[in-house]
Amino acid sequence: MIKQIKNVTVYAPECLGTMDVLIAGGKICQIGKDLELGQNVGVEIIDGTGKCLVPGFIDSHEHIMGGGGEGGFATRTPEATLTDLTTFGITTVVGCIGTDGIGRDMTALLAKAKGLEEEGISTFVYTGSYQVPVHTLTDSLMKDIMMLDKVIGVGEIAISDHRSSQPTFEEFIRIAADSRVGGMLSGKAGILNIHLGDSPRCIDLIERTVEETEIPKSQFLPTHINRNAMLFERCLAYAKDGGFVDFTGNEDIDYWETICDEVRVCTGIKRMLDEGVSSDQFTISSDGQGSLPIFNEKQEFVGIGIGKGSCLLKEVRECVKKAEIPLEIAIKAITSNPARILKLKGKGRIEEGYDADLCLLNAEDLIIDTVIAKGKVMVKEGKPIVFGTFEKPKAD
Ligand code: ZN
Image 1: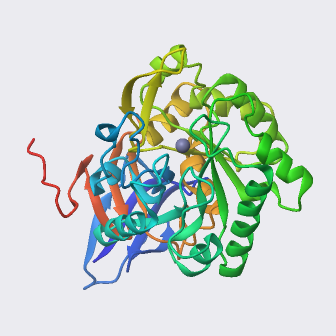
Image 2 (image 1 turned 90 degrees about the vertical axis):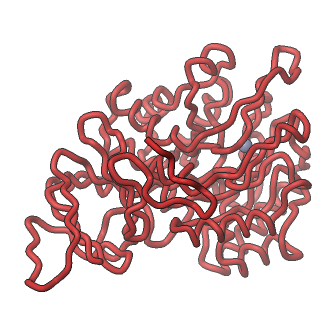
């Protein structure tokens, strides 16, 4: 069925003003003022009055088949269901494994990604886990990237962390080189999604790679950059010098900000913009379904939380409401920026010919009203109407 979203303020992400947006065949067909369709054409009208239309969100780092396990087997986190994503506006997700690359592997990750795609959203994955050598699906990471459609890069490789495989410089640059060439040969980003831990070595390995080899900064998307103040300052300098950086959203930031020195996303993005970093260079991801192990000062495990996809829009809302960053800038961090950095074709923008992945937000409070993935309405009036295979609609 053709859909027409009428009279809505469009953020493409740049603000286009009040428009009508026509959707058919899963694509955005036309954007214009007061579009009139001919008679005898079946059209579903969605009233956009008092709402903003933004691209569907892209979560560039989510543990879709669960992660964790750092406190023993009972602490392995559950898989993401379809509505764990769509309810919060996520229409494209990049899945990753995490610390446990033994109990979970690439075959299972790819199967999970295919399942979510069949249920209606767009999915991609990174090959590998924290570990080095990288555990791949085929016999090489270059082959994984070249020959498996959903594999867009390698990650999350852990560095500067007590849970890392502690890759040597030579091991690290070989991974970067193979990922780059695998990406080039298949028209993909071949990005390295690098998990940053909280040690003082921060991004040493990435900086040394860029200085001593021909591999450019654009090959890396380091994540968790706001884990602590020291790491954030290093990553701010790295971004000022042209690097891409990924903030991790956090629903419980009030706790983490005081106990763990974590940098609030809106504060970090404001700093970056004030210091001249381009608004094209940063992304926000959720680390959804990942475990949030809580350690005491002696690095002893004392408790566990779980990441949620809901933090993406929450962080954008804080950018707008708390840090007074315009919506058209803040929203880039979860739409056009990850799409461009990860080379996700047809994603992250409201533009004719692009996939009809869209979120309709209440203009006043930036709360989700409607979520559309590949032309299909998944969430209506804030509630999911399409469910994963084994999900049951929740009674009001
Ligand atoms: Zn991580």
